[in-house]
Length: 363
Ligand code: ATP
Ligand code: MG
View 1 (cartoon, rainbow, N blue to C red):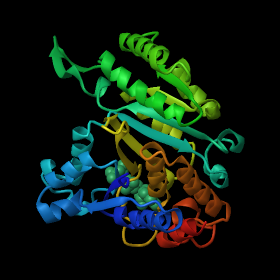
View 2 (view 1 turned 135 degrees about the horizontal axis):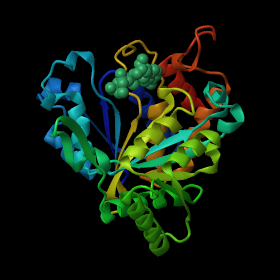
View 3 (view 1 turned 180 degrees about the vertical axis):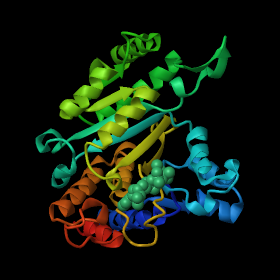
């Protein structure tokens, strides 16, 4: 069988710094686990613009369509702020998302015990938390027509339209059910079926897909406002939450911050199944290129490392290795190792990006 293939796009700013630590883990897996990836590295964002005059070269785009998974660092930086909109670094990422048709955005909220004090919530509410929010990413109120600011009579009116087709709902529902089967087998779907037609359709379609294709998964429905409250009250009641673009935007930020620093948060964006049955996939840390700390060795590599762990679990069926990485992260945090973002000014001396990566590999 062919080796699993991975396209690494480290990007700009701290992107290459945190990605270097992921590469150590890939090296470890080859040496100690006999797992060899076909890794291709390429440019995205500002560094691609510097070389090719575009933030994503066509060859890179074609490669992204072929591989089992894309792992991305971060794009952008102040030196690119004055570029024309069409070649801004962020456009490279947007092109990847659009042409790979990544309609399902996975944002885990996972709380490591050693960091539970970092949360604004009580420790027992967040300790051991492990949930994933699946947000529909390519439709809904951010895209629906009509949209615009119009004049009606003697005043202006701002209009956006929440629009979902059955097939758009069905495909993101499937992606949530597939995910749940690799986890605690539980999905909670959130909408506002009490006041929105798109919510009624959402609930119907999710239930239909469940009954026909995923009857083994435990499914519940919740109004999104109640969902927001439950997420803060007792988040451990959830495993996978699936919701639309707008509610998902708000709920995933809320859930993410139950757990601590931006430097800890991974994400995945999934598309339609490829010939091998696995979805097209792009994994990336939630954080950006952090130009303020780029080059200083302060960046926390854990978000990028956990993004790679997600790739192992969801694109490569290597759940055991994913868990092994997560346990190693848990271990180094329990040992008290902290990058600067994970400590207050009085908490002693932080370790560097490379020291954190080395410690995780050793663990
Ligand atoms: P973007 O527009 O690319 O999302 P941004 O400015 O909104 O960029 P980040 O680049 O993520 O956001 O940076 C926000 C803050 O968080 C910065 O002060 C940055 O230094 C810090 N930060 C982000 N990622 C990390 C990390 N991995 N480790 C430590 N600090 C980080
Ligand atoms: Mg940002």
